[in-house]
Amino acid sequence: MKKEIGIYIDRTYKVVRQDLINRFKKAEIDITPEQWVVLSKLEDSTMNQTDLANGSFKDKHTVSRILDLLMKKGFVVREQDPEDRRKYLVSLTQGGKKELDEAKPHVYASRDLGWENLSDEEYNQLLLLLDKVFNSYSK
Image (cartoon, rainbow, N blue to C red; front, side):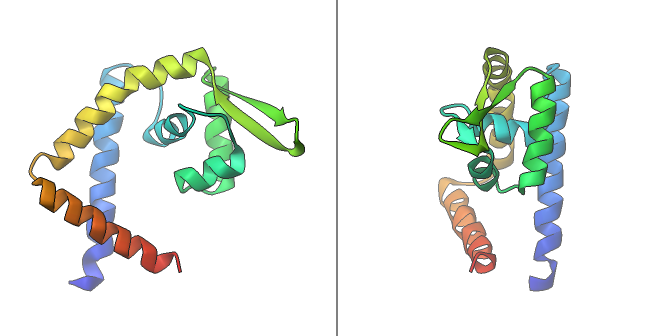
């Protein structure tokens, strides 16, 4: 059983991701689930790319590619950090905020679908167990 956990995690990730892709497509929302993660991290603050990568659990190169696409769509801006010229600060544009706000109900509906058959206790236990697995790799 323990050997199969990766398959279950991967299978769940894929079905959740596809549900969100389908919801975004149906609502004509022009972002991917990965872009959603980055936009949502920027909702309340400007961040440098390193902190954005760490906060979204993505490597710097992946975040850089995502940001390039979001910049082309006009959803984010990247500006040189005045305190450290080697870093760039990223923030949402008005268009990015609008896209994020339009996407939120679909993200929440997708999450609700995933949790609808879990009691509060089961949900909390699942989070605890997933954290334990995650922390095993984070030593």
